[in-house]
Length: 455
Image 1 (cartoon, one colour):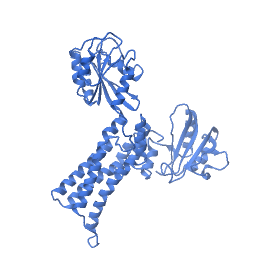
Image 2: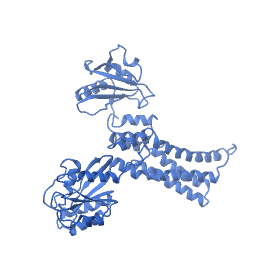
Image 3: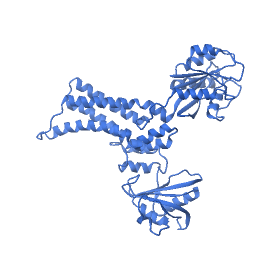
């Protein structure tokens, strides 16, 4: 990491402000070549963490913008290295000229996520905190952002570290007794090991249980729109989105494949999946679409069952109802309220807990539906960084939990301490992957490849 990296840290679209970011041991020298402070002192002599007004120069030394520059000196910076930001006008031309000027003075283009990767490698944050950076950037609801910033501040890391340190204490003490028999080191007692393993198991179980909520918070609630052909499923999707995403016609079977989009309803993020109509068909393409509809329902947490209120229930409706009833949460929607109703709402209310009448075409009743959906997923306790949010984290916790259970099982049947502590070491290894205390280089590269350039 001896080279100095640079990148545009803001979007490449015209905007009021754009930011160029720089990090590495040559940061001060490069700044002196591309930024000329109005107070006459070079940036290398300016106080850190203070905005300095001056001129941003291109690679030929010509002024391309009036800008502000701030220097963060190592180790008190985001990356742990000398780091700087130049805040200029957000013209893509200015930003690109400024970046080329940084390159001309010795910086190189930063890879995606390289600033945060350096922060991790330099001990400025652990791997959980590093992953929370991209979660914060990608957050689509306020609650998701709060959980991400809580992780960034170390909430989840402290929980993991507590478990890690407790296990490390018993493992290291065991090896100390074995390696230094002449020292006056008390042997590990069975009850001490059992107590540590029991507490670790309980905490890991609680942690793993947060993944289901964390996944919904980050990715959205998988919501399948079901019904027979021409019931108005695609019209409902378009109405919820506020624009025409799916093709709507009077021809039954227009939707042949699943269509996915996200929509935020107050604090709830839905991952909507419009499906092909549920019915028996000889059309081979439509048949594939129907099977995909059934598969989507199996993966969903919420089903919006659309019934055509202008026609009596028939066998195709009942087929769709059978699929929808397998989903954890179900809302029955009687569509086409703008037409003469031929469906018995009272009968449906006897069969289902949640029945709503609306018109996807006119928007009548749509607010009632959205309010009802948000009531199904109340805010509850606001997440403050304690939720696992990705499969990598959940897998590491799961492996650590299984290793702890193996250790407790070995202890209960009277196995020797070295066998028990071998399982404890496996748990430590899994937790080390979680927070980055022991992790392969290729896994680090994979994790940070998800990041955007400039972060």
